[in-house]
Length: 222
Image (tube, rainbow, N blue to C red; front, side, top):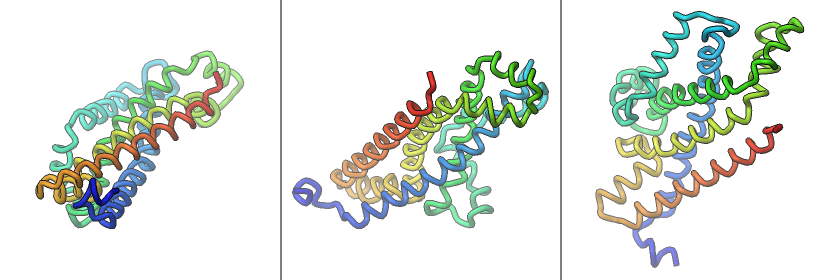
């Protein structure tokens, strides 16, 4: 049946491209989660009226986040080629896509983290401080646990965006399903290859959404 509808698909290549896409997405999501939480916490804590209030640091981080969040991903890849060459030593392959994927998604997620932290009841934070909790205790015992459902929802949205980013990165030689769909499908007029790559990407997105929604519901105490 598969050979009838997808005669041009080389399944070993499709499987290899899927692994490359999962690799790029997985590494990027893990690092983005850490960097995004750090940036989001700094944005929240240095804002007016918060524990580490500092207008200069807050505006500097905010400017960084806004700039890199606003640059279209395909342009960001091109802008980061010199940096990628220094870090990875190549601009081709799945590892070469990681710097752009992380730098493009971490600021986006940082804003989601900041929004999640702002939704925490101020009374809970004040209660912890009134009991003598240090700043780090407030972060680990109050801010992160209370905002965790929002953080998981945010990283789910970011992970889905990263899947689409890997497809764009693949179009310029980063590997993965995007690269396969472009080189083997579009350029050779093999529509069945492009369709199959798209179907697999959709399946990956649905799985990510399901896992994210399930974890978020379990963490939500409301």
